[in-house]
Image (cartoon, rainbow, N blue to C red; front, side, top):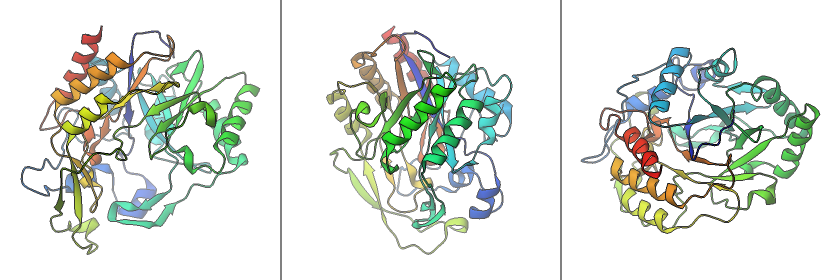
Length: 364
């Protein structure tokens, strides 16, 4: 699906909100992202936790009605499409049931694209980054199998987002590949065998800020927030006693890092965009204490007005490279356990969606 609208906002979407076999094995029967979300607690006076949904409730993304409700709400406030995280481990897919609902049959009536979240899975949620639950293994053989799966089952869907009739596919962390240029070349060669050209981007985070063409990509996508910028910590706070149940592993107290969203917005507004092909992005808020029992990052003073001002600045500064390369990305639609969501919550309601819509209308 392509369009030449002035600006097309794409919200990043996490499909973790449903139980599946591997999570049952690794984290306990019935685990979903809501498990993390609802166990969060305030860590200091005035700390907004837990982040709890309002309008859409505690949905289950195995239900197509849930995906449709998300799409209808997003479109009502000017969101063009969703970028869904896609989890592929040498032919094994995880959290794929919601994505299968998108690609089978008529879909949900919302433009969508995939971003391959190509990280190992570990027990980082309970503080152990060393125990690998499932590992990424890269090879040309897997590159061929992967791109052919996408070509045959995903990219051909009428709702899949394209740029100049080229399916738009993103990579989360290209630095983890042994040879990303070889992988992309393989993908493009395999796609051409089926008469398809690809438009491939990478998420510009984890201190990787290179010209996308130097690695074989078509575009770089800003990934917010960028915790590698030189932004002083507002403060640090000792954690409350560790949670009971799933995460009660006896970790010692550890400091959360408190950052000022207001100061961060000022810094981002003062920064310029690179000269190469680039899509900017924004984050409404961030607080991943629900996932990170130690060493969390928290934007303490985020609010819809600051988000609106930052978004207007992005829209004013961004000149799309072409009539179809006119995307901005919003991280995220529903990262509830990272305190990072446009979806309505019990504190802010639809304020962030309203701010998004207002900013888009302001530019028009």
